[in-house]
Length: 467
Ligand SMILES: *[C@@H]1O[C@H](CO)[C@@H](O)[C@H](O)[C@H]1NC(C)=O
Ligand SMILES: *[C@@H]1O[C@H](CO)[C@@H](O)[C@H](O)[C@H]1NC(C)=O
Ligand SMILES: *[C@@H]1O[C@H](CO)[C@@H](O)[C@H](O)[C@H]1NC(C)=O
Ligand SMILES: *[C@@H]1O[C@H](CO)[C@@H](O)[C@H](O)[C@H]1NC(C)=O
Ligand SMILES: *[C@@H]1O[C@H](CO)[C@@H](O)[C@H](O)[C@H]1NC(C)=O
Ligand SMILES: [Fe+2]
Image (cartoon, rainbow, N blue to C red; front, side, top):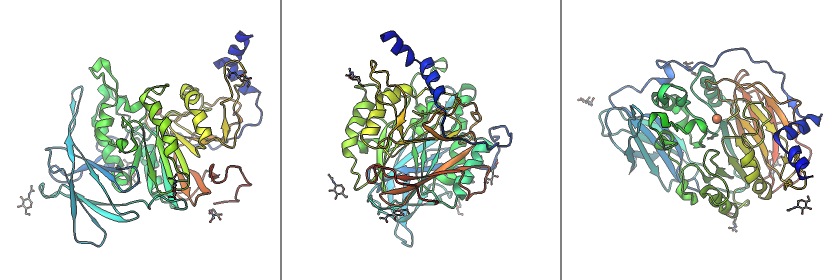
């Protein structure tokens, strides 16, 4: 008896069971042109350093506190430490404020980094455009950028997030980023679901490719916050090179406001931004019971006030639901651990990457199984999040095309093309999610779904006709 139940829920059993479904969602028949994802060469235009001795480069910003009034500015000076100061001022004002940051370097095998600066701006005004200047008083090569702070958290604040995963630095990566920047939906903040530079695919994890990636992404990341999630390509764990501590390049270069949410690690943290509460998790850190990540997340749920921030989003790298053959069931242990919380606390969407393709799920859960009852099939569940896999940024490993067949019922739409997502919050009840493939025009929506907030609109009503 016990044996047969265990067998039916084993990998083989689950697979056979899935085969019994007949009415899955849509597997797109779109055929993208064959075009190998080669990394852009080192002398590419997008990797060119800014002119001038020791000019600040690889500039990127991210939220710097829990509420949205803080901003972390990070940049690299290649030749000497230079200035740690960020000057900033409100559009129109001539009075500059300034704040001092820190500078660090790290070594990785035979590579030594440039001077990496991190500086936190605090108590900014909400919903305000600022200018900021780096490198002033440090030769003549200062650079000035702008950003706009989010509105104060509140229930009906419209806000537009972009979503990109597994970007890398190929010609396809370049198309994905350009497509995102030119999308008329105008993402205001980017949710990045892990796997940044893919430097680890080079001999000795050539960290020069971390620098080129920093320069490549600056055109967006210096002007709007990128909210970082760590993926497996951030591990850079290489004992054969004497690199025993994971995440060293990533943690040195990409600082996040983890302490502001009571986290003890930059690999998991949360922020509020406009009408969204965003929880970032780490697929590649311990997450079992009693671990720091588990204990932190357990306390997070009570902090979420759905009146103030109606939209509850979770970011992680490895998807919990994925019907592609590649990485199939890799997220299963984390699903078993955390899916009950996602359903109980009515998470609206879980965004993940890792699989180099796109997939959107129905609202489904798979939490009834308890070893003895045999209930191991995903079922329709209005309290469950929608799972979006969007690891289709365009890195050098290429697309994943092989899918498990037939399409499982929980899978609403899947397609192996490069692209990005937009999560457009309208008010406390409605948000419009869209996916944009690189091969289409900038305004074209390849897949979309009106989302009704799980807290304010807990049961589905007929979807609106269009965006
Ligand atoms: C990257 O894309 C931008 C924007 O479309 C373009 O100007 C640039 O030439 C591209 N670079 C490469 C190396 O493809
Ligand atoms: C900065 O500009 C001044 C005046 O144009 C020049 O004298 C000085 O050499 C420059 N400094 C650097 C580091 O280029
Ligand atoms: C939740 O947020 C609303 C709106 O900001 C506020 O009025 C309310 O007091 C908050 N509730 C709790 C329990 O903090
Ligand atoms: C497992 O689930 C079944 C029903 O689904 C229930 O009767 C049984 O008590 C559960 N066992 C445990 C250990 O919770
Ligand atoms: C919320 O936004 C949706 C979509 O734009 C709209 O249909 C609905 O009327 C809005 N709700 C309120 C209360 O304004
Ligand atoms: Fe990955």
